[in-house]
Image 1 (cartoon, rainbow, N blue to C red):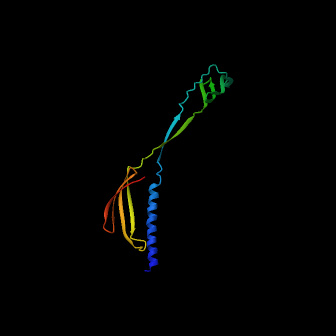
Image 2: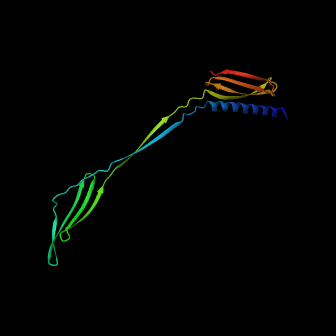
Image 3: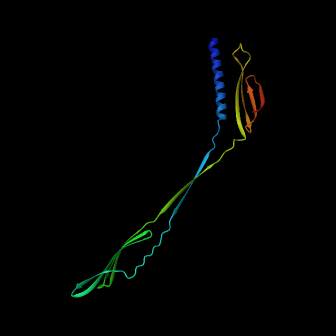
Length: 185
């Protein structure tokens, strides 16, 4: 493998590692939007039925005289449309004197209202950042500017406490192990 290809390979590896670290940094620093919890309260209110009493006395009637078998009978008729509050009554009354019967036809129309109420309450709950978060790091070490071959590669893992203090362990290819302590400013 030529020196140029080897340089390009190490530059590519270094750029990929740097890009990964920058990407992890920006993903970790991205603000977490607080969750929006919505509650919908539905309540239905309907009106109670209205009791409407209509009382009529001494109704004026149209009276017809009917002869059946030379016997005279009277028939009384009354037709009226009554409108009161939220009710309408179409009333037809007939009285037959011969059979002593009333015939009543009534068409009742009543208007009832129902009300549907929807109330939306939006509750916002803010979740605090966790006091302890996990961290990871990767490093590549070179011994000088003339030699592009990395001398060692290290990996580390740890925890971040209260979004400020770091404690971690690391190991590298030189069989070096250690503990890192850090503070974010």
